[in-house]
Figure: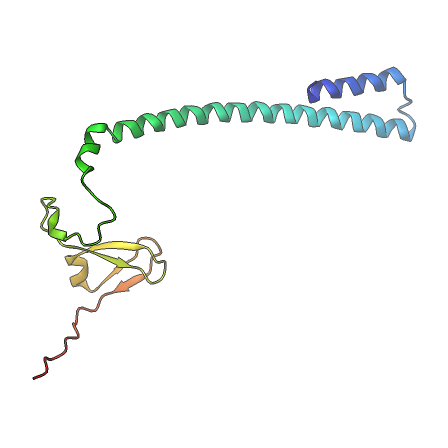
Length: 149
């Protein structure tokens, strides 16, 4: 039995008992039955909304799966089979991406995120962290020890 059906049943019981709604007890019982009827209607409406949202989410999930399948086509996966993510001693020039630009990874001291900067940003001496907005400054002076003779 649904909430709406239960609410209608209680209203029928109240009408069958022929409660005097002029007395305080009858007024209170009638108000409770009316409130329960309103609650049952609201819950029913919310269930309909949840069902609609659930159906929409299923459609979105299916669309995202299709996009994921398109972007991660099996042909592209073959290019990365030999790549070992655990390999720590990979040289930068071991993978030639056709770009001679040197990139550096810098860890933001504020948010801890790693950001990538290029030579131009390094030459400027500072950049802004895109994650937290903190200005990062770079000191290009090298502290080299003089060889002991």
